[in-house]
Length: 97
Image (cartoon, rainbow, N blue to C red; front, side, top):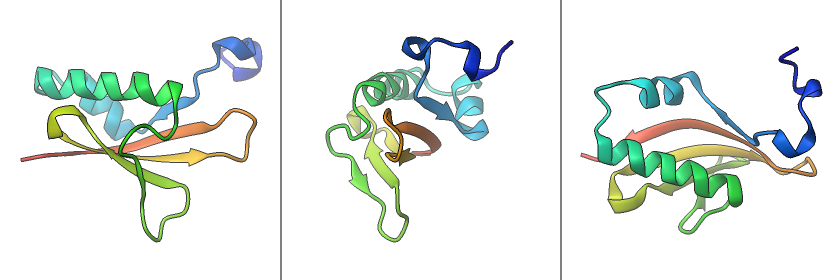
């Protein structure tokens, strides 16, 4: 019964994280400042699929990138706007430094 069809619409999460992003979040070696910046970004992304400073990735339709707070890295993600509620796939985190 974990099928999305069993979840009421108001509980549907528009974000899907790639395995690499899930691993990054679950890695105890991820620095706390980067972890918190990524979590803050994901919260913002749920509210707005095109947060401040988000830019389309040239040559990759639907792909966008946006910086993490405090210039700690860059997040790449895809937005499917063809649906009533945009679906967002967070594909990778590029760390600064």
